[in-house]
Length: 259
Image 1 (spheres, rainbow, N blue to C red):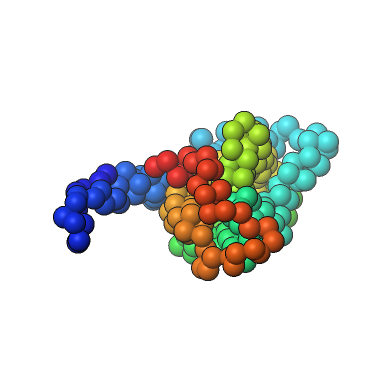
Image 2: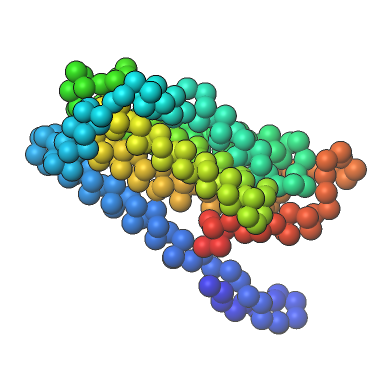
């Protein structure tokens, strides 16, 4: 939305960009849905609903060894260094094709910080909800901590969102869209593997996806704005790897930038 303003010297009217209320709507809606889901899963004192117990019983009854091995490999993508490496790669790619090393390094640090702070907030929510996991006898992999929201699910979804953001900025068009879609599908597979391995209820996984989506909607727009401004300091002229300033503006907008 724009509003007219007067030029201080010539009296000409200029368009001044005002922040759009629509940009704040998605994270607010997602936060409300997450809050409702947290209330839903604790309303009966943590007793699971049919929407949780049905898929859980099916997964326990359908576990050939090959599927369990595959699910364990997939679920490992949501913990340890893997999410942070994906976030760092997203930050490196999101710096832009004409970015210098300093700008890319700062963008990498910011992307990793987005994931790390998101992890802290997710842990705080987990402690607040204090939901129990499914019975340990049904687990096909080791797990610790409380259930809601799923940590592996939220971590992989946040990392996939950051990686997709970088891919869409660095590779405009079909290649970036395909690779971003693959990263999102892998994150979805991590969430499903947590249910299949019996360590989370389906609503825990849904909570992890809602949390990650809300956090990304809050953090990706300012991260994009930071990158578009060129980072903390412009690279000196003649620096290897720097392109003319107009190169960054030619990039295709990602879905978060078009809001």
